Length: 135
Image (cartoon, rainbow, N blue to C red; front, side, top):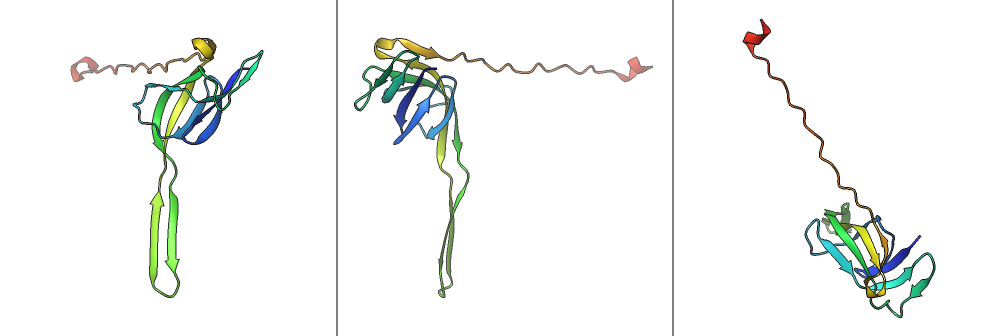
């Protein structure tokens, strides 16, 4: 099983194809393809490449699924005996991505995901019966 370790948003992630991750927010539209060039480690079934600090020429491609917000974190400040309180909340923004390809040096594809598009359900038409037809 091949995998890669990438760095984005100041954090490192171990990724495999078809994996869905929540990373720091990216400035891209939903459905766009994102390319991560900062690959720190690349593992194939046969060999492993460790970068110093990154593997040159290697990249990981992903598809942006959605931009979401995290749960609310409450911040509460109270100063005793001063009748002073302050309540605040924060929701961190994230991007949901799905890894589609892992590429080695020279653009050689190590692993590729098989993406299945979701089919829209078929709406059944309602049969309208007029009053005259009922008789």
